Amino acid sequence: MDEGLIHLDAKEGSGQVIDADTGEVLDESAQEVVRDANSEMVITSDTQGLSVIDGAGKNELPVSLPESVKLEAAVGGLIYLREDQTLRVHNAATGSIARGYPAEGSGIVAVPGTFTSQGLGTLRAGDRTLLATDRAVEESM
Image (spheres, rainbow, N blue to C red):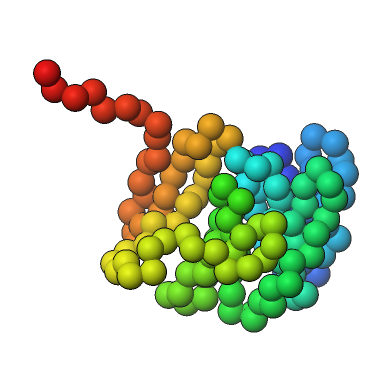
């Protein structure tokens, strides 16, 4: 959960999402919530699907979510959803399927965890946590 958000569990796992700084109610009945630090969008899920909340307001995306789908993360305008061992990536602006990883790839998929607006953060790869930085590697002379 993002430090700037409060998610109240009012009934059966869903409740209001409140901006901790302003007190504004962002969503009335969210089951899950993540913030994309890069775009400052807040993404919520409920029984109806996904909603993206930004400076322009709330946009409900045309993405249906079976109960088994979990909201994993949102980074760089992409929303990551997990159903068992399957990871789906959606464009936060349109809701359409996005390519988050090479289609021909195989192996363990690294899923974004917490990221800052500067692009630094963590990735979860199986049971490991990886650190993503902007550190430049100097070449040997």
